[in-house]
Image 1 (cartoon, rainbow, N blue to C red):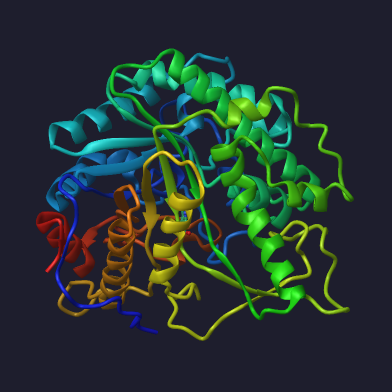
Image 2 (tube, rainbow, N blue to C red):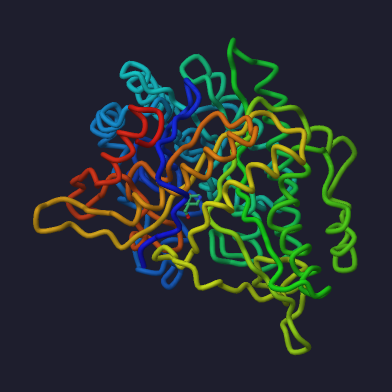
Length: 468
Ligand code: IFM
């Protein structure tokens, strides 16, 4: 279905120097999973288990960016967006010994960063976008506190090696996914279904973030910009009934506030902890952890893809706290659709939701400047007989979301940039190669890249710093 959630048609202009960009992640584009000393990640393991990936693919080849990075840098330069956000593959950079990096991995990211800078594109790096080294998972993974310290060691070493080449650093991408999606819902690697493990994983990810912030700050080069990216999917109740209002509180609490509040306020949401304490203890939180997690940042990255409409489960609903749920403490709740136009993933198009999220975070928290570090949509893109990819739906989607963020800026939000997810089609986790988010089409068999219509459209937005 085509997006028609228009946010207007008038020309808009962004503040001078607005940070346009596009984004990718290591496992989703690099391929070359065992090249030059890279060790396996949990995703290498998981994607090879039959039945885990919707279309039976895996990330072994992805977009072969490890070998084609120079061509991709040329495409980014042609696009002209000032920022390119990518992640470092922890298993490409670090072997078993804490602090010791794989020089070939370091060389790859140095070459990439330097080539971007040489072409006028500022690199923005994420330390962890879900490809945990398998050997660390084997030692307990994120449910184990030791992993937070492993992450801090890796972050410190990576910053020492690359901090002269890259100014913008993000610790984690979307911590809900390597915690709840990975250890409770089971849709992501390693496929666990234990809500207690997932809540511990969430804390150890946030602790790893806090420890990494401390280590990187201690070694900071001039002009360091340091932050985290958190995804937020605002939650609305289906009705004003007390049960639906409570369902919205519980779902919003576990998928949004449980991550944002510790980072911005140094505290977990008290209502969610009170709910969950009947099922588990929180003695994995140690003195000093929350101060580390709540340290001041230079930038807050927000990713937003959808808003959730929720209805409380009836008497026959599944248990609130159960294995296999994304909504820990709200496993009874139904997530409904409004029948709005949606992408091919079924995610309803909701640019007002993006706008309102930015206004909410800016007004209701004491936040550093905001950046939309991911926004985009998946469509069933095909190469037309003319050899082009005419992705009108993606153009309309981006038009409406860019107008939405513009309205947030007009409302007073200090929003510094907007990065489209994604630069190019890639390996979309449990959906494999079947879900295309890119501005650049990738033929995964031949690795030929084709600029989609949305590439040219976004290039024009960047060039004019707005929409004509
Ligand atoms: O592809 C993912 C990305 O890795 C994290 N944010 C959401 C995207 C689309 O699902």
